[in-house]
Length: 152
Image 1 (spheres, helix red, strand yellow):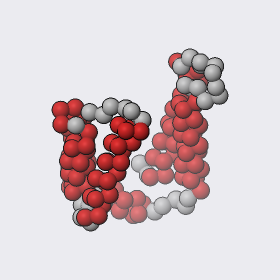
Image 2 (cartoon, one colour):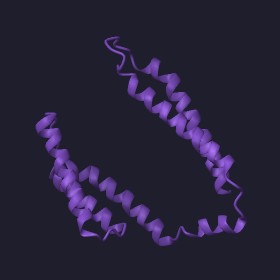
Image 3 (spheres, rainbow, N blue to C red):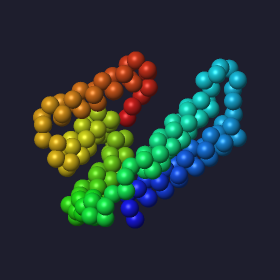
């Protein structure tokens, strides 16, 4: 299958998903009627955003010139065994993250798993590691001390 056909099909499927969420939201989420931005607002906003992005993807697939078969095959050759193994390991690390967060806590589990993910994905600049550790600590501070939400 060509990349343009994949973009058209996925754009169409996501457009259908956005329309489905837009239609189903009122029957699944009761409106409190207290304000305009009630419990239905966020799912409907996301469905509109999904529909807009789907239309952009579909329109972009029609506006691009048809790629030659050689370029399409080059794109498919970029996916190697090592990149597939990295995807599988990343998925496994995320599953492990969900299990270790409760026993060892949000901060430590996030730092360990994100560090392993970044190393796995060949991020070698040291300041990226400092940035994600700082962001993790800021998120923890914001939730625990500003929003009064308890994190594991």
